[in-house]
Image (cartoon, rainbow over the protein chains, first blue to last red):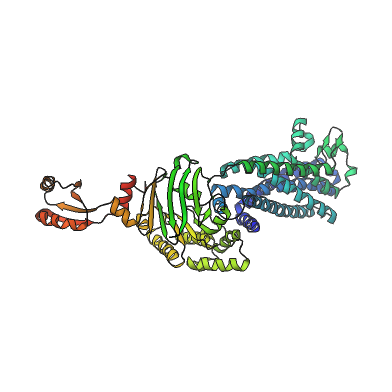
Length: 282
Length: 304
């Protein structure tokens, strides 16, 4: 039963070309800005190193882009839930012998599936871009690690965003959420402006924003393909958001992973609690 | 007599403008049942309660001898609903829609394929199975909606204004299909409609207003009780006709140049016609209609 709903949500997402495009819009904007401006800036500042520098900056930006994709595409997929509510399609599900939790779970499972597929697609595009500009394809081990982080980050995003999306009832309200996320994500992931340049207070905001840990983990994996992280100075690691520091100690990858898992559990818990409290409505 | 739906003392204040304040009725198995009322009378609330969408404050409702509130999932297996606004997905084909929604009822793959074929045959849209729902015309969509409601071969089919918004020809063909359903397939049909000519074809009609049941009966009973036949005369000389009628204590009313005289039965027109023969330009004798009955019961036009 639940799989026919998951299949439905996935089909609807991919058949609505506009929703696919808009859920990738933030990603496309970041790539566009990078290709047009940011890339030149970075290249101009470190021209001595040549191709290797290019490989490094490309890897750095693409890690952020992939992490962004895990958030925005998952959010785009969750739009189906609001659309069903706004168009009262949920009544057809609720008058069928299918449990309400199955309906809810179907939205979450389909958003995770869509998020993973679209992020992998973004990852593939990123690799193509990197190779075109003289870099190399990631090693198999790095690919497996990236895959793991993509899956984890997508699940976290789904949980995190599901909570907010479940509070809205109209597509207008959902558009507001999309716009806010789309606008802020480039900053919160530390892409437009590297985290080290920002004021300390903002740095803390970024560090407690769970998806930014996915970005940091992806940077560690992808940049390690260019240069062993131990060759990079603590300042560089901190400034570029490759590793997050609290005081003098940096967060180990394990802590970031646990933080993502913890966020997932907490937000799913809150959502379940809120949904079970919600009155049954027509 | 088998009561497939039985409602006793149903109260619901959840939606204040559409409150239901204690209504009782039952629906007989295999019949076409029309549920009427002006906008805001509590129709939608009542239907939503029976369809397990809405909780209720008081009363007992049973659907096919199952208790509402306790056996909801079993009830959901036995009802099919055609909602006023479509609930199918525009971007999916008719068959995809049916396969997904049919997937809720625990049928095996083969059973589901068979059920889809049957639903498409009954609604006569086999040739549309691979078309996207969003590309269908209004009448075709309605048929697809009905096919979805029939996918699990429900015992009761709820139709919430199934022909509203369709052009007259399409409305007629959709209506013919609905009639076939309950005649040939033995499905009990629970209908709400704005069209009195459709309600007039029901086996039994109930009318609610302001959350109360205000009338019930077969269409003929309602027409007999709440509407009257009438004689309409366009006279040569209106004032002399009116004078004569007043003198004989015959009640009448005027609409522009026509004088309307209510009758107990149409044959009562004969002596009147004979009497005023010389003063008549044209005349007609009209039977009471469901429209008249509805207006006199609720004091409101249906389409307001």
